[in-house]
Every structure is written in C-alpha cells, then in structure tokens.
Image 1 (tube, rainbow, N blue to C red):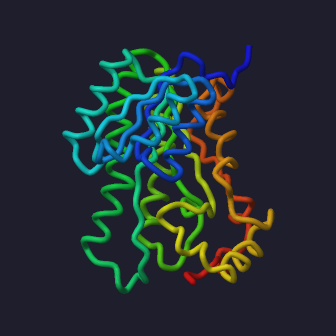
Image 2: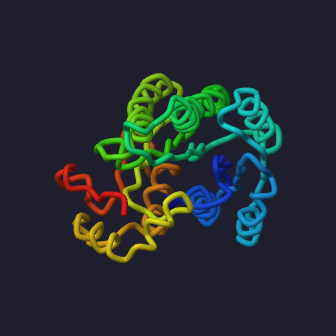
Length: 261
C-alpha cells in the first residue's frame, strides 16, 4: 500500500481561489482526494473547480469568510453534509499588509490577526468537532518562515504566523488523543498574488536568492510533497510540528533578510 495515497479522502482547503491555496487543492486532488474549496466569493473558485474535476475528482465550492464566525460554521456544516466527513483540513486563508511598524494602524492589526489567526482557529475547531467524533483527521495549518524568523515591515503578519505555530502545538496536544494530527506547513519565499510585484524586480530576486542556501525562491511544486506527507498516513506519528519548506533561508542570520524593493 502507498501511504501517500489520498484516494477516497475528503479534504477542505480554505482560501483556494488563487495562489498557494489553489495549488494545495489541486495537489490533494492529484493525490486522489475529493476537495471542498472555499473563498469569500463563489465565482472566484470557478478555475480551481474546473482543474480539480479535470483530474477526475469531485470539487465542492463553498463561500467562506474566515473573519465571520457564522460563515465558518455554515461552510463546515455544508461540506460535512455534502461529503459525510472531512478527513483533511488545509487552513490556508490569510492576508498580509506590508508596512513599517510605525505606520501600522489599529485596523491593519485587526485585519491581519482576525484573518490569519482567529479565523484559522475557529475553522480548525469547527472541523475538529467532526474529526474527533470520527476518531481521525489531519489538520494542516499554513504558516510561514515568519513563524520562526523576524522580518522588518511584517510585524503583525509575523505575529499572526508565529501564533499559528504555537496554536498548532496546542491543538496537537488537545486533539491527539482522539486521533487528530495538527501540523504547520511553513513556506519560505514563494511568489504569490499577494507579493507578485516584488518578484518583478530582478535585482531584488537576485539579492533574495543569495540569502537562500538553495539559491532560488520557492516554486509552488516544492510544497506538494510536504503537503501530501502531512495529509496522508505517511505522517501518522507526526503532530505538533512546523515543517519549513524554505530553501534553508531560516538557517541564516535574520538580520540579513531581504528588504522591500
């Protein structure tokens, strides 16, 4: 048997309309899972839905705003009612506002922490109620290299991602006895829709690459293996861990990290 095979599994991926969330959803489908995908607007999920169904897997688009508790409860209930269970949660939805610390507003802080930390907790809680009842489940919280390293201009974002790392450990201790593993997948520097403008600066990309031991920014496919590992039976005895997929940048002196171009 292939411990990485997800055939017959039901996955839920939040923030799956674009970027890494879309990639995660498609990677799970390629590994055999049927996938519920969420975004604040259903129409934005059309492309992800088409790509999943083209792989011969079922896709269920669901509207979900992680800053709205009622929306979380409704979305998770819809997914569970449709598929009958949820085996895998990829807690991906998030946002970022890049500003020097002196310019961060009260609303900036609330937007990032509500989206990146409070929302993922309550999504995990809603899904875990079903997983705990079933006696099994895989929860993958999406963190960042900022979960373990400090970056200028990313104070609230780093606080939210550091919080995800700590939350992962706490939830792993909470739900491990019921057969639910909780881990954090932490990408390094990857080009996404949130930061694409930075990668248009060739000089900055070269500077960034010099700081990464593997000498290049991440490509989305670099995350697929780690994601499937954490979602599958291959990681049955792994919980509470943060798996950095960052080309090694986290081993370097954090004072020498890339500035905003």
